[in-house]
Image 1 (cartoon, rainbow, N blue to C red):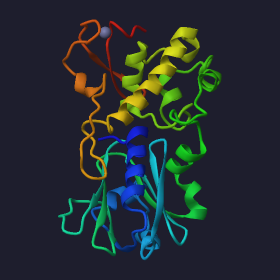
Image 2: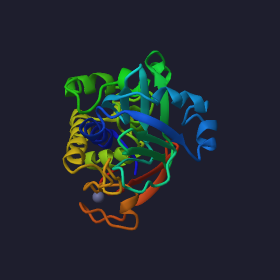
Image 3: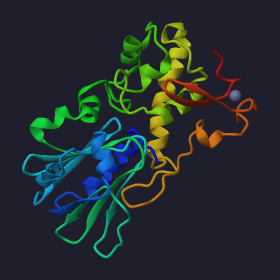
Image 4: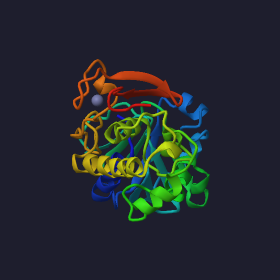
Length: 279
Ligand SMILES: [Zn+2]
């Protein structure tokens, strides 16, 4: 259910189609103490009050983050990057459990629930850049679906670095936004690279292959409506199955038949094919 670049982009587009012009009558926060304590939600409940009585102006995505803009300089930063559900409900629908719910004046509603690490944060426009995921995804590195993410750009910022692939592709110092651990496993499998390789060890062809894999993954996932386990704003499942990841556990590599393995790497786990991805 992780929300990475393709899913964030789909959510923002759907919000523009469905939520634009709606007015927030009230909001409800539920079941949130732990998330507030660790900073995934505003520590102060009253921060969400800025959303009340405001009109949705539109939504944009950047990296793994959706930025919902409201009147009155109110904003909601939504980044359920390791798992979450963001769903729209017509007036008569029952609402699933949520951490934040916006009740619109026409009776419809938006519910947001994090199921793993992520952020749901209200912010006034002047404070937006204090929100880590907003700063990272809107003000930082290039997005793989943007015109600026050319091979020349990628090669420039990536090549020669004496660092492993994961911190270069995932997290706060990455050279591209929108890639989390899920997409990372898929991308390096497509490119036939072992996660422990360092950027400086890649040949020109391997660097090009990695760049192409990033672009191809984003395009495929967008065109198939996001990942299969993920549900969109309307509760519909996407159609994309990762080529590598937990879904490949106990299976053989479709390319070479080698048994898929899981290794601990970079503060998490990475599934890989020892046949196609040599270190
Ligand atoms: Zn293989």
